[in-house]
Length: 297
Image 1 (cartoon, rainbow, N blue to C red):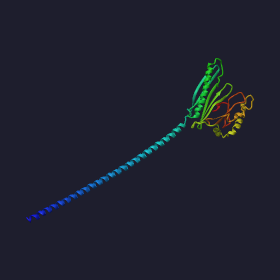
Image 2 (cartoon, one colour; image 1 turned 135 degrees about the vertical axis):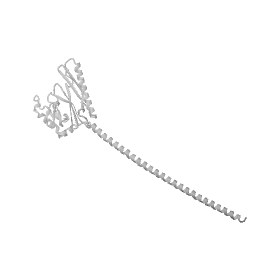
Image 3 (cartoon, rainbow, N blue to C red; image 1 turned 60 degrees about the vertical axis):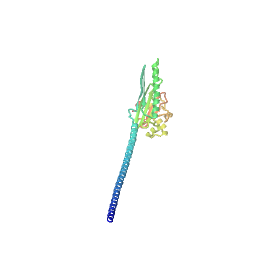
Image 4 (cartoon, one colour; image 1 turned 90 degrees about the horizontal axis):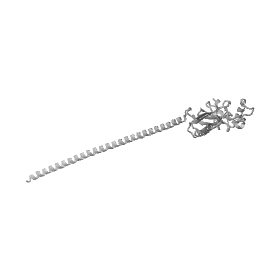
């Protein structure tokens, strides 16, 4: 009995040692497994973080490129629009000369031995001054229409309460449009009814003094120069009346200035001193004098 107890205790001790050893081994194994899982989890988290960072970086890069691309597109569009606007503006300013003045109204009437003929222009420029000019032309057209209506209803021969003939000429040179409306009466030569000098690019009125600068004539020199040119033309004297044009009619205010398609500046000077009405037309580049607008080529 005494021998059995030590053996039994030894077995128990061996079993306990074995259990403790297995437990320790199991604990160590569990710890290693845990550490391995933790390590893998950490690695997974790290990889996820890296992926997120890469994704964020890629997104930022893409967004940056997108923003840059959009900015470039916007800038390109803006530049194109600006260029287009400039081109449109240039195209707008370039008006075909054949269309810049068209016929507004034309009417002929033969009454007894008298022929009435009216023709009026329309200025095709989009500006305030051009619109005002067209209104003036419309007013003249109505006067002509009224004259024709009166002649048609008249029971006896009569002169129109207006010009017998009206016509117009226009010139384009150096971006300047000049429209000359003139008329004839049975008792004299032609005279200017309306005259317009227009900047073809801006549509604004061109002043007389601006045209005189082209021939280097100062405003204070104009009257004396015009008076001398006209009254030196002996062939224009009629009925031995001298001078045919008075000096007070040669002021810049009294005269009309226009620009021809040859680049010459003309002064239309009122004829007075006789009962003949009309204008003399002086080429200020050459001092040549004409008695009719139709003679100016």
